[in-house]
Image (cartoon, rainbow, N blue to C red; front, side):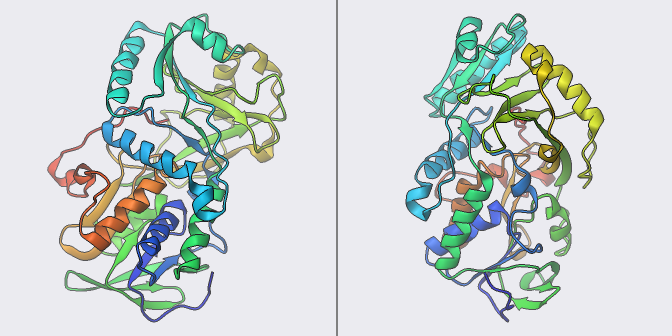
Length: 393
């Protein structure tokens, strides 16, 4: 870490969260050491990364998302060996619950797609299978579901720590308390980044500003369709009746999901994304949301009637949503030197390893070799070539 602003850098990354840190890690791994990461806070992880719940999964509805998950999961499995930091990967699995025939049919199609895309651990499960995997559940209204044993949980801040430490050890600089206030252009070419600490001359800028990416893009006269959307999390006091090995449980009907809070005292982590939420940077915790969430919780697990909410384990964070719930990765046509890594729609932590690799390839090699991400280009919004991801939690 450093507080001294360099006069020039080969690459400037705006945003010191997990996506920016992963990009710095992969750039320095590939030999590019003159990388500067701008973090507006006094420490990293105070934005979306520190508010993430750490779920990682490969059960998606599009092959590209599945491919990004599979690469990232393999990376996470070897992360401690590469960085010395244990991300605490816990493969408890994810169970998606179907309560209608239509949902059951959709899951059958999804499993076929997922298996074809290389996800071998996913399988259809019956009501009896689900009862065996998670005996605490009320499954009277459940017709079936899916289970993937490699899905699970990590600690986002540990992943951030490992990325950052290795990037810095290889020459990258992380500037804390440094806010980007402008992007300088000479015609259509990037020439620098203006900050509250001074100006850095550079020809390559990466926007990795998370929920605030739209504001950064506007500094370069780019209209980026990324909007912040509040998401809530509620934690409880220790609840030993929920076994440590319980998978993440997701109800397709309501979207309510829960998991064991392994690093929060052994309670339960309750999550539900209300469709009434509106775009904005509101981070205030809504107790009306909690009341509705507890209704879902006690239906799915009657023993949850005894849950005691822990206020200090209740918070809200921001998703960075795009119109099709897919990220924007790559160059901006018409502006030389500007790259985007934005709009992950809740999947930034789990896909950060793949994102860092892809952006480093785009910048240093001129193309993404890991996988074809042309469908994630910024140009898709103007052309109308959107493709929705159905599996947003």
